[in-house]
Length: 106
Length: 414
Image 1: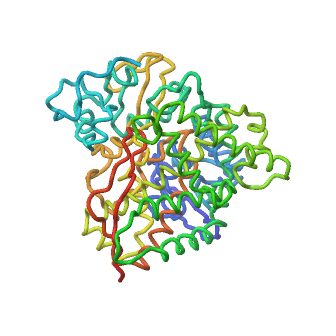
Image 2 (image 1 turned 90 degrees about the vertical axis):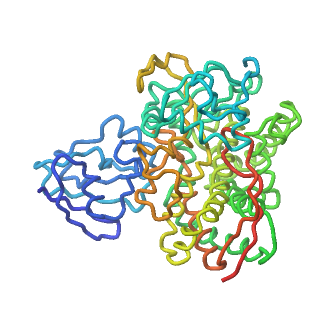
């Protein structure tokens, strides 16, 4: 299974095995990674699974889609590499992906 | 507005009525607290339901969790203009506010103020909130009956609001009054007439206009009035638009958290086993907070207008139709929430409720509300064995604000 590393705001790293076809958000939830709330359950409707993609990985993950952008825009702390992790699907291409978690979910 | 409805819903069991005759907006079932059984029937038999005639004209009811989420998410096809409650705005008294606007204007105005309640700012406020909560609780009588709504729920939320606006603290109960008047009407018993209501809201505008001028002359600070007075998207608002946005922020920060503060106490009293769990394990408090917000659903609905014909769950909503998303019903939908009628403080996925809405209009103050409730429960649990509810609380006679006007309690120490 592809591995994904989540880095908490305080620097704590969590490397987890992620199931192909599920979302990056789900991989975090399945492995009890703290710092992701996912209040809407993965429908791109709440923006509480916000992550910042390590810039070296941006080419592979791509940027936020239109619906994602309309939610991310409401967050004053959004960055250029911000994504909603429920909108990124795990694939073999993303093996090794690194994402940073924000200090707070919005 | 159409003729008065012929059937008084509260006189009937939901099953005794033809589906087409059901009107869940009717005040009688909210006053007598019979609405839940009507929502149960609609969710099962007509999840997207057309009511052809009501006090508010024809409207659709959407009652299942997933359908509500689909519509809430789709601002392109479902407009929030000109209002977000089932009642039509008064033609001679429009109150434009960003919650009742679509993107892009909505986004610009919201961005101006949302920093005030964004999590980074909340961290700075937590200590103040805790000290105030401690003071309010320490001043309460133990072993004597009093009204929890007035002395705790209203007091704490009103103090918070005064701080966010940097509003003169001694006048803070004016905010409570304006909040109640803004969502009330003649039948709520709060005001004598629509004219009297508007007159009170003009007083609110007048008061806040003074604050606006003060703040506009000073440099920008991080209170809400200053943010509005200096923000590019808001500094040129008309007075009516200023009033509309003030009411949005006052009601949003007041009527909602207030009723979750009361509703949580009431739910724990009805579920003594859950109260015992909380006593034994204070670390469950963040979950109690989410479960209380779901259980209470302090705003029962939000309304939209369809921009085009739209198929959902076998029905076709026509362009121009009014659509009411009943959050209160969605939060009791067993298709999406396990044992939804039970209050379970350590429920899995307690955060996945509809009370904050979803999509671009999702509650801006959600994190503040959660923090206020968390701090309240932390401090209550330190002090009291039980907040015992005496009798039944009195309900707000509204199909929008789902809350309490009074709840008598007695405190028991550890």
